[in-house]
Length: 250
Image 1: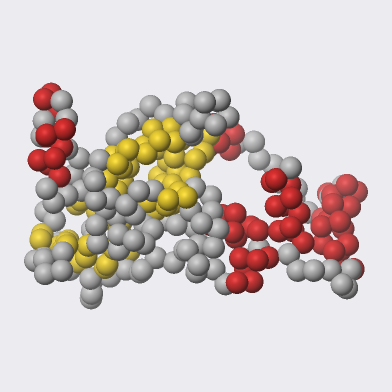
Image 2: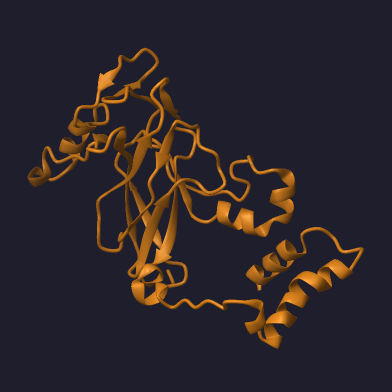
């Protein structure tokens, strides 16, 4: 295997029932309008950047304004989430597979956090990235969620931190349960280089404060990008999308 073909990320599935990660798809699972999918390269590139992760089972969450309850299975009872809860049957499976020194140290499936209506959910996955690569864990791009909750984003240094890949949810309604489906993406996981979000990188920003400071080259770039294409009355839709796709294949 050459360096160029070596994986940037390896996902480890500890919960057997958990759906495997999938490459995020440029149509946002078919939810994008056809016109956006055909002509808007910016939208489709964002939608397809990374991998989707899913809840390891279908479950319901209910927040009454004070306590969180959860339910799984067709006729399951509502269980209070007082601190942490294991995935059903997983603790025994973990103890059977792990070295003796790690007995009873299986990661929790759900964890209630101190902030009202907030919990941590484990995908059943662990991830390891190539040196210098980290993972941005966020809500799926351009894919609407079911509603009733908000996902926090986080960047994990998975090139040296080998632990559960989880999400933090804040429930935003109390009048009805929130349903998470095992066949619908919950997270989008995107690779970023470790230096991309370092202060030394993000401080490298400058502002051109007004039109009077644009240089002739800036105006010419604007002309080529905006004016020239619109002067062609017979131009096809999606010129930017076509050119960017050709560039990516070059």
